[in-house]
Every structure is written in structure tokens, then in C-alpha cells.
Image (cartoon, rainbow, N blue to C red):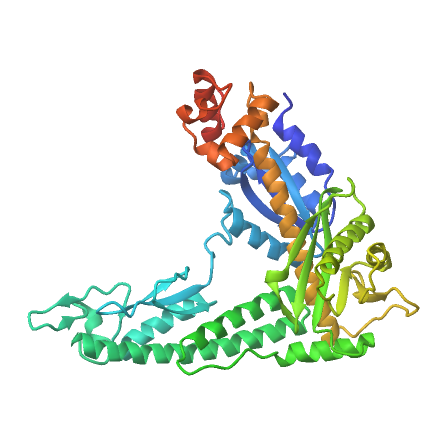
Length: 493
């Protein structure tokens, strides 16, 4: 059997030299490390060089390399995109050998259960439908903790570390240590008086949230001006979530959501730049994703009034051919999308955007011809120079980098690219998990099929006991015991 290090060294040397993210997996297909690189080939080959003296002082890396049995990559358009993708994948897989990002699961919320006799202000990362009041999410954990400490001093409220004691006269003593002296108000109080403190603290927190909301929107604009549209989109979504949370805590707030000035100016500018008769209020964008011609998939995202309509997103597996042909893939998915809308009598969007140049635009138009439908305006956004490409006699259009129209198109295109890459990664992870049984001797195609059909998923199969495994036709007591050990520990007797 070939030495795993030799195999991985050869695989690393064949990687592209552009930016991207790499994933290392153990013999069971589990992701044990996620890393980013400006040059994938150069970075990954350093792990598997014959001379690895520099790693001897880093036993953690040495152990990781010894456990690695396979690696895969996701190429990206830039190093900045690789950084964002790395963080998302680490949060998704929680690899054993990663230290960064792992503890940054979600932004913090402040949780107050008003049904309790003495409600406390706690921090949590998960919102539940339990009747409690939640404030947030707040992106700056340190600032939030300082604010809660200040609120304890100012309003005399209980935080998560409070252990109040009931007194004989029906009152409560909130703290029995030095903290009793550091806030205004009495340390001994009644539940009725304490609830008034809680209400004042909630009102203060809502006001504080408004300040942080303004800071988020300011940071979002700065990121957009510096052309970091993915980070700007994340900040926008976070600000929208915070705005909705604040609105829910207000008793008389019945305003409907409105289009922001940035979104409105983007649509107006896009209408003018493209020569449209009306604003393109509904825009759909397609992107193709693959890894060296394998796992070819596509995504479609939909934006309405300049905002992502995530419930309408669609993703596609390429069915019509095998291999790597972006033009054929684009023709297939555009034809499938609008052929279906045509059959259902649903209106087409005002504008269709494809990630690519004239070839991709031509493929999209060919799809409309194949379904005998009049297409809306179809444009391409070519990555290298961010050039808008038309299919008619108009030449290429280059907008100023700060033009709201170009910013809107980039935001939509980047969202389609992110969505396609995510689907691609899911498919590859699923394929690798399903191939885990290939490494176990004595399990052929028929037994493997019966096992997967019986348990449904490889995750359920891993949890099965020898007794559970024996319930599958063709799995005897000895084989069941050895297979259970292999699935849980990666060992074969």
C-alpha cells in the first residue's frame, strides 16, 4: 500500500497556484484541518516535504500530517475571499486541529426571561422560542460584557452570576458579597420593585443597541467604499438582524421595511447604465462551480428591490454531460430555470446576470431560444476587469468602481459565487463520507449498498452497535464487531 505522505505529496504538487482553501481529512473522511493560502500548491506542499525539520518543534502539526489521508481544495477569486471561506468552513466542520475561528460560533445575544420572579440578564448564542426577551445579535463581545457590568452598577440588576436569597420578610437579597456595594439602589428589594429596575435596564439596552446599529452601518459603508463587498454584505445582514430585533421589542412600531437609500440608488443607477425602461426590481444571477472539472454545480440567487430573497435561491446539479464545460453548464441551468417558470406561468425577472463574459452570456441566450421564450436583458459580469458584457451590438461597459450600479452587481455576483461554492463543498463532503466503507476489507458493493440502505446515512451507521449491524443481511457476528470498531476508531483488527 502506498505511503499516505507520498500520495499526499504528489497530490499537493498538482494543485493550482492560485488562492483558495484546503481541507485535510483523516481515513474516515472527517475534516481535521482547514487552511487558506495565497498560493495553494506552495502552501500545501510544505506539509509533505521529505525534509520537515521545521515541524519538529510543532508536534501539533506533525500529528495532523500523520493523521491526514486525503486533501481537497476550493479555489477562490482572491486571498480575501479565501479568508472568508476559511472561517465559514471552520465554523461548519469544527476541525480538531484548528484554533482560530472555532470559538467564534455566533454573535452574542442578551437573554432576559421576564417570567422569572427575579429576571437575570444573561449572554447566549442561541435564540429560542421560549417567551423570553432577546436583544442582539451584538458583534463586539467585549463591549457587550462591559455594558452589562455597567448596567448592574447603574440599575441594580442581576447578571448570570447572581445568587439571590429570599429573606424572612418576603424580600430578596440580591448579592451577599462586595458586589452589593457597587450599584445604586438597595441590595434588598421586592420582586415588584426589581421588575421596575429590569424594565429600565431593557430600555437602556435598546438605546445602546441603536448606537451599535449606527456603528455597524457606518462600518458597512466603509467596507463597501473599499470594495470589500462580501464583508459589507455580512455587516448589512447583521445590521438588518439587529434592527429587526430592536423593532420587535418596541410596542408601537408598526412600520413596514423600506428600501434603503443605497439599494435605491443602486437600482436607479443600474437602470440608467443598462438603458432599461424601468428599475430592475427583480434580478437573478447564475454562477457555475467545479473542482478541476468534477462536482460541477450551479447556483441561482434572486434579489428583489436590491435585497437578497434567500427563500428563492436555487442550486443545480449538472445532468446533461460530464466534465468541465462552463458554457454547456450555463446553458443547461438557465434553460431549466426559465423553462420551469414558463411552464408555471411565472414572470421572468427584469434582469438576468451571469458570472462570466460573452461566452456565458451567449450560452444563456441559447437556453432561452431552446425553450422558445423571449428573454429579459441578459448581461455578464467578467471577473478580471469587472466589465459588463452585452449580447447585442453594444460594446463592453466599464463603470467607475464606486458606481452604485457596479456595487450592486458585484454584491449579487459574489452572493451567487458563495452559494455555488457552498453547494459544491457539500456534495464533495457527502461523497467522501459515503466512500468511508471503501477502506474496510470484506465489504463489497452489495454489502455496502445494503448497509447504507438500512441505516440511511453514514452518521447513523457509525453509531450502530455490532448487534445493530448484524440485522443487515450478509453481516455476521465477527464482521459486525470488526466493522463497528472500524467505524468508531478507524481501526481494523
